[in-house]
Length: 179
Image (cartoon, rainbow, N blue to C red; front, top):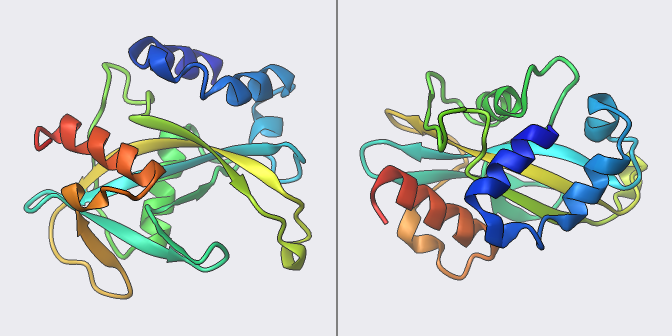
């Protein structure tokens, strides 16, 4: 994981300061299992994807029940996931009815994410979880067709003012040649 982070930072050196917390977290984690463990009180790695319809560059957002926000599909990395990209693909399939994604790599190595975000998660007493951080590795997936169900499709330019999702949308639009 440290190699993925260093490759990412090689392309985004301006984000090193912002990702110091993740660097320290990885330095303290004894191994991959500790870094993805939900029992780790400091936090854990997560994976998500900006899932974009190829035809009109609209991104799929899902309603996150616990946080009460619209977010890109994503979530926890499971021990059986072979990589953070595999986790992002699994989460996109679990949270949407979509299949047959095309991974849009940002690097010669498709495991290098388009974005990494560190965000605070408040305590959830119902799950017995204290406050912690998610260190989210984000990818871009394309799909074809329609989306049915309780999802929001938002054009990439419409993410202005959406905080960290704005940064992800700008990077995604740039990668796809539409921004």
